[in-house]
Image (cartoon, rainbow over all chains, first blue to last red; front, side, top):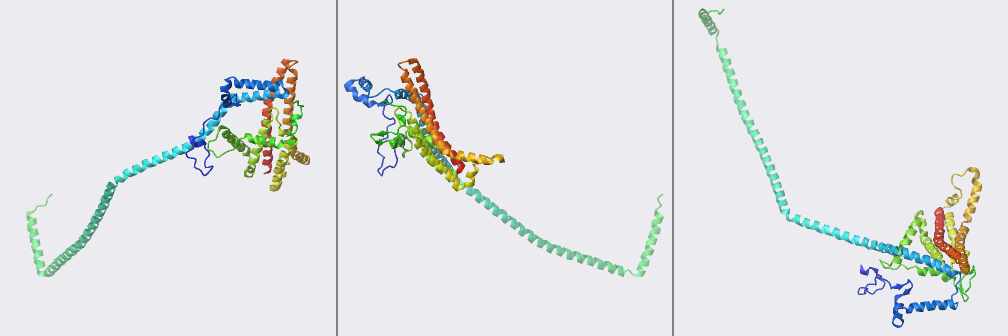
Length: 228
Length: 227
């Protein structure tokens, strides 16, 4: 942050190797007279030199009436005391406030930089995670391949079953047809045999058989007693 | 040099060369110019913060058209503030004690607001002449009264600033003369008068800042009505 107080891009010359500006301004005594004046007079007149000069100058101006004491003097005394009181009491606070304003400006810019750095670091971590994920993609592919193979196998077996069922249906049909035909032939034959037997019973045979039955019945009735 | 009470209000001249322009432009020398550094020194930082705060506060009630006036109003405020405050120092000339200067500031600015209003929205500006909810019989009288008050505004603006500052400066002169005159006779009363002078000086500092602010505030108010 040393170089932030330099003017930027004022000329076409590059400002890169210039040293940074001083942090504080020149030292001032009594808010008016720079320290360099006291240092300038120190070798010849010592510490009290400038003060003697000041007092002498003031007395000269007053005694020769170059500066006349009139009502403006006392008004000057009042306004100067008000100003000095104000500066002494609130000067430090105002300076701290100005410094705070500058600090906030710098802090805002630093916050932007830090957030950008944090965002980039998060991105780096996520990228690393993605790279780790890439290493496991073989397993993913194998599982998918197995899946597909199973699906294909299942499909094939289903179709095989369908084919088997269809073929069995046709064969069953043939078997049923043959059974039906034999059954029909059998029935027809039995019917024909019965019909011919019934037709072959002549009337004489009928009478003989009825007489025989009556004789049998009589014989049986003799042996069997009526159950009471 | 011996001074009478009204010498401080005489337009300054050095060997026949009028210095009024110098005394008007001098306050600008005391304000730091904004340069292209990102972090400025304390004075520049405070100055830009103050101007931003003042302009934002002044432009709050104005619509977008009124924001065109932000530069002139803020710079006017700064000029009046610096002139008034510098005039409190001894042996200085305060240009705002001259009625001519204050009228030259107030009259054109007020006229500008009036003409803007009459040109862009004449019925709205004229409508301000009648407050809402007045009983019908009072309307003619009220229109006359409001017109008078409208036309007297520039005079009021100028004279208010002049009178406040002139009166304050005269009072300072009078009371300090009384202090000086009483010093050999009754030193105690002189000390009392000195304390009065101290309080008066604090008042004058406040008045200097307030009058500048009131001038600009009233102008922005007139602008609000008309823009």
